[in-house]
Length: 446
Image 1 (cartoon, one colour):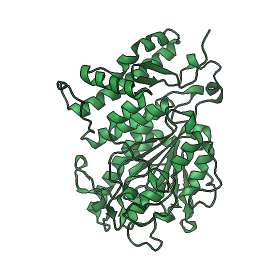
Image 2 (cartoon, one colour):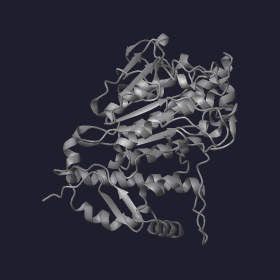
Image 3 (cartoon, helix red, strand yellow):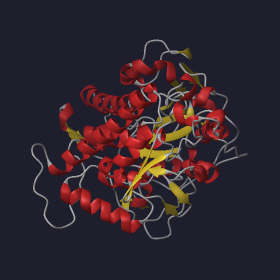
């Protein structure tokens, strides 16, 4: 007789809890199996706008040939909804003068005008991810997950009189409290796969560091016992999943210790660090996001690929100038070509993430990508103009069958359709319906 358990089954060991993906052999008559896989929602943000001429599909309707920047997404085109004509009015000055980058990032998920201050009296609004987390977060171990690549500051003047908190944070728990993002993959991994007892978690981490142990070594006995109850297909799925967990763990360790043979570990806490290679950094965080969604540790996440106003150079793309500097391109063809390289690089990382999601098989013949909605975009349209209308926005995934993807949806620029109208539509699909949010005027029809 098969035991009915939920998809949140975990393998446990000292200070370790490795959540499992959906397994048919264990689904039985569990309510989660009857309801189907849960829907997940993620928000990915890119700074400084994009070159819209290389972003926007030629016509509304079914997606044909993808424009230059979106070409890396060809393999998941049937899961894309590109949306043109949305605006973020609260990222505009509206009488507050310069500071477009701070306003763009802080208003992107809140739909609220940030108070212009670089003191402690910051104020903007609760973000869309936290609205959903408040409604569905009780169903998972973590109500939401906040990831990032650039740490940033939460105090000081970073943009024309605006606090650094505005340009460094995408997720806001309340109007005055940002959710700090985690940029260290090691800490994210330990958070996801650590147990609930802080003492046990610390002891397990110390043992792993001292003896070069894997997190999987601590749940080995549990895994062996579970393996006996699984069908052949699920045994393969479990093996693939645990292999992916170990592969991510090894990449994190390599990033911390450097290539080659691991250095001898001193009798002290190992230092943390992030990969020097920005692509590996982004992809590691993306893999952790996929694992968190796959095992239903959370259903809501935010992941800015850089802070707005970021002036990071991309030397591996032969772009030595800073991103923000180049975004003020003045229509210079050479600068536009470099902006295209940066924009394309970011979309390539999105394509990697979506590919990993598409490879995760779930119930009813679906994939994780089928059951997700991944919003990707920026609070600035063209970086040179600093405009906040006709934003570069797409939604990847099918929202559990609720989204008819593979389309380019166009709303007239003159209508200034609020970006928050999109969020109302996504709220409904996530079981977190709201009458209004931020500066919304109605539910977007997509």
